[in-house]
Image (cartoon, rainbow, N blue to C red; front, side):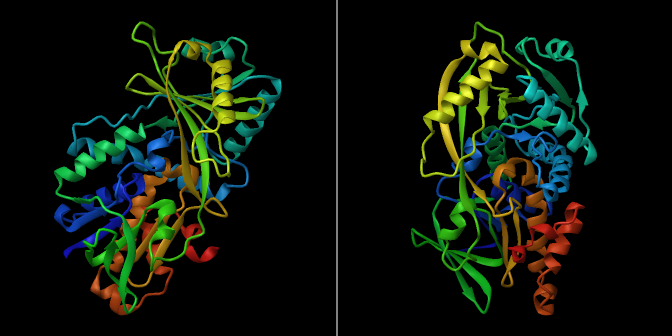
Length: 395
């Protein structure tokens, strides 16, 4: 049985950035394993990838705001670290984001949201429609309002995850392409991760549960209060003979429905996003129809693009929409339940998870039998923001 100091279950963006953070903290790559039968195939594959702590705010989720803002601050350093290790593109773009309103009622919604964002210390500025169309001539001339958010950016999740996997490979991290089915424990300590193919992986120090909805399929792991919240995404391609309809993220409200249009560095455009809790695992016809109709109303030039694909992804939602961060037993770290903000919060989640894992991995911490909240305190210090709202015991 192969044995590693640190074993991460899940190779979506949370698991991959957790492995990357371990490397950055000085753990030898050869001491790290990431377990996943199909890396980058879950929610990260379908995600929009907006690093948008301001535009993504929702009423009633104020406890999330400081986490979102802090994680956005950590992202440039994360991008720089990946670029030092890999020559592959990350799809990171730092243009400002425009948020527009389709009609007068939407403009009222936009104004009210802007007041809420400003009240919570976020930077957002109202701009005249003529200014918005000067920045992005592809916007419809019949919009009713616009604001600009200078600090909201984007990353292409597929490209970033591929670059991260390449960076990890360069560092000697082992990718175990197998299904984790259980945790083997002894006196509260996880000693191995059980795999479906029988080639179990030994754990010397810490194990990290970063596999989203799949966490509840791992026998011996804590039962997490996560549920699948699905979202539809449409991908378009810009014909070689035409200019890109827009050059930055355009978000909007169309008859109070949210819409976003994301131009990528690879000449594709992502359009999203719906949110539904039903049994349809494939894209919903209603969702795809609504996304295309609303996106074209905001950016008419999208009609001339080519249809690439429609996808549906399932995000791990929690009862209060906050992530699940904490420890179980003496060496199991839970970093899960990131819901709609998995891409944005991955920089913060990775740093917090690794802070807990390295703390638990020290003989001194294990011998002291520290109080349950101490690892989370360690994580809060590591990221510079209070994470107590994310504690496992809150639900």
